[in-house]
Length: 489
Ligand SMILES: Cc1cc2nc3c(=O)[nH]c(=O)nc-3n(C[C@H](O)[C@H](O)[C@H](O)COP(=O)(O)OP(=O)(O)OC[C@H]3O[C@@H](n4cnc5c(N)ncnc54)[C@H](O)[C@@H]3O)c2cc1C
View 1 (cartoon, rainbow, N blue to C red):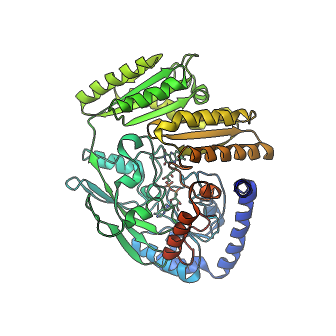
View 2: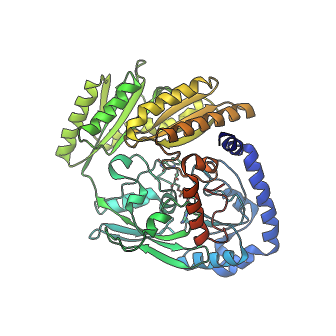
View 3: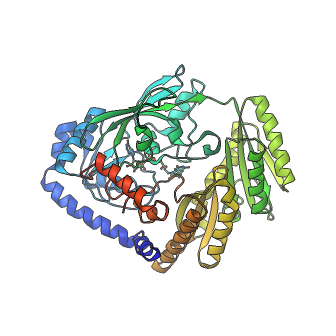
């Protein structure tokens, strides 16, 4: 098993991408001669079809930094457009890659086999917000933060909150089942999707779920599509569940001398029946990167771990819970607790957390960012195992931070220029993923598999289960036109 995975892992880097882009070029030749852009213009209007090279380059990559050119980009304006495009692509067996904002980190929106990019950014209408039903119905191109702020005007709350909320789309969030900082208390995207309008590979339009909080009629097709990474169907309308907007949020930034104290505090907070809105862990390497970033937040030299905690609810209960949290962290040897009482102060504390990801490039020019998730009780163990693995790769740097409340840790392996360094980083990542599965965790808590992680799928998913997944894919997309090259190797 190890041998097989190793071979595949090597494909993750430059060699693999070069191979994919070659396939893309041959697809381009074939499709171009068929006058693809002309046929699509007849279906959706010339103004919604982009085919010149400069435009296609803009759609050739996503947050994974891979590059593969699509043959053509189509910007549908309606469900009927999407259905017409897919019916045509199905007949002609042309690959179709749905795309939101292209912020995905595992290559989901990279058209690795060329073909058509379906850009959903113009299908961005909020169709309905219903305070009475506690629901909203939106088109897939709505930006997550726009939905959050529009529902907040009705004192309603859409809780899933990926760090990419200011630019990622709801369609992309549903396709990746995005998580984010609020997972501990409120769950992830799948917990808020009530119903979907989906266009299948052959262009047929189906509706899954109901606009009700409860429905157990038949199989749960909605859940099947959530997290399907554009490989089973294309979402054209999404109905989400909303909650009443919490009255108040208080933020605490807690400084610790040891990782153990920080993790123990996090467990004890939950053991004491407290459920923070967010609880983020930041390790020593990450702290070093952002030290001095904000004048207002001085981090003393003896600090080796931070917890950033949001508590929300009614004003009185937030106050009580915040003081209980302070008691717990103080019992666990917190060096200092900084608290923010208003939105501006909160923003300052959270900016430290938001700055980590870009600041990591101060350590080394390249990074692989993993989003492993382990059962909460195994967090210290996995961090210990990662430290042990790291000792065998002294030329690499490792920084870990993330949503400690739900066991989701972003492990960043940083490396220098050169094939050898890249190969070492990949080898180390494989060991980390293997260990994650061994402690009962998952190789992806929120970023999905795409093509970047498909070589590792069999580390976690047993053969029969993988077979069932492939059979489902074949049932819904027998010609394999929907986002080919993703999820499965
Ligand atoms: C700085 C940064 C921070 C991030 N933080 C987080 C985080 O905290 N939590 C988290 O979970 N992720 C995070 N991400 C990853 C990324 O933002 C999410 O995966 C997001 O959901 C992608 O949305 P998108 O609109 O950019 O989708 P894209 O990247 O365009 O597409 C993602 C996938 O969705 C599919 N897709 C898009 N639209 C549709 C549709 N209408 N129908 C069917 N399939 C579709 C695509 O084919 C692709 O497989 C982060 C990324 C960045 C760059």
